[in-house]
Length: 80
Image (cartoon, rainbow, N blue to C red; front, side):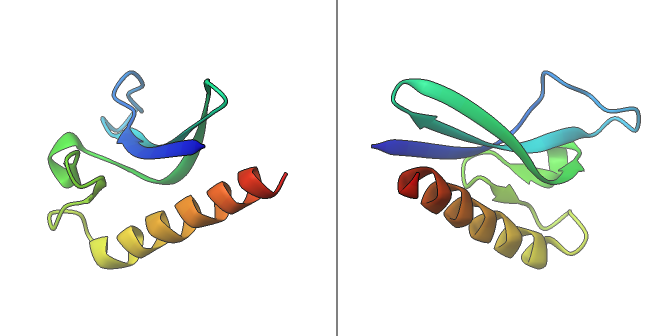
């Protein structure tokens, strides 16, 4: 069974003050992290829903890409 979360990786701060968005997949007690989307500021990220907030420009399209990428990575992992 694999579990996944989309996180704002706050341990790494980029030059412009943003943090990368990563997909964390835990499978067989091993965690893998994939950088999957545009980095954003903490106030542009909703950690409870694991999506971009309305303060992020073009947030609806970015949230769609997050969902699509999560599904693609999980299918690849489960089929291998």
